[in-house]
Length: 195
Image 1 (tube, one colour):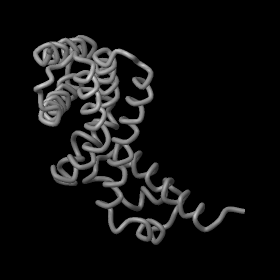
Image 2 (cartoon, one colour; image 1 turned 45 degrees about the vertical axis):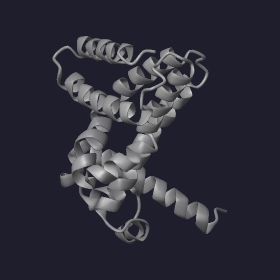
Image 3 (cartoon, one colour; image 1 turned 180 degrees about the horizontal axis):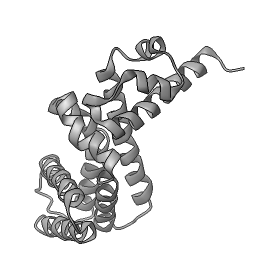
Image 4 (tube, one colour; image 1 turned 120 degrees about the vertical axis):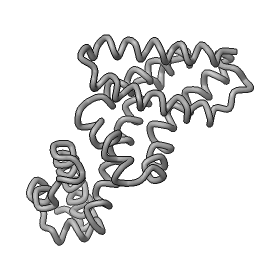
């Protein structure tokens, strides 16, 4: 028999999963809490027990989505000995996943507008932006990138460029070509940061 703590964790996870589906399908503004609780097989009371309001639930979804993306990048790059190649591989993973319609809508379109830039950036700073910062630091440590480079500033600039590339790729008529162009541009930016 499951403990109260286990049931609580399962209900919370079910609400986040259901909310992700609803926010991805309809966007934050048009997502209905009634549809979310129905998808989760929960009650409105259960939802409001776990989350203050729809915005708090959306915050949890954005956090989970960005954490999922960061974990994917971490798992795919952890065993790569060449930090520069690892960084480029991580950038490709980010672009491939952030351009998916659900992830783009949640993280790139609704995330900043619903949560505000400060909270959205805070979420990124310990998830996807963290992976980028760590990749740049590793490349700098291996001597690939300039030692005088401020990794914090470089990561912020690079993240902004990658986020914009996500929109360019997603809106392109030829997404494959747009992705290739984005990878080439990212590599050119990194070349400019070389030691």
